[in-house]
Image (tube, rainbow, N blue to C red):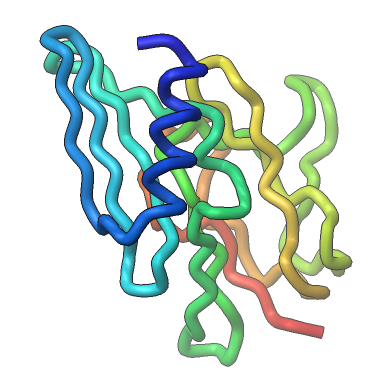
Length: 151
């Protein structure tokens, strides 16, 4: 399954009214589903054991959940299944640490899926209350990565 086919399928799925799509070509399985807000996420399974997610899921169509937590902050969650990187490189300082003040559009972390590095950017001005994932962790869709307070 090549990336142009996947991108075409995602575009058609996002444009339509269908809320769930399953595709199986005998080798690869593709599963797309829209949540209640009409946003979609994607999982591609190769064989039975490895989970890979195409880079296009990190697009603006991917959900980035911001629900209130007990301290009056927001939970910033992963829009994809990926590897979490807190910094741009092995010896570099992390993008954010607890107490960091971040402007909308600034990078919070990098999420790697299928050898593609996807920057997760702040959607609003915030102060980071905590970082919930460790560098190199495999994170799941909708897993909390940061607790933040809007500023």
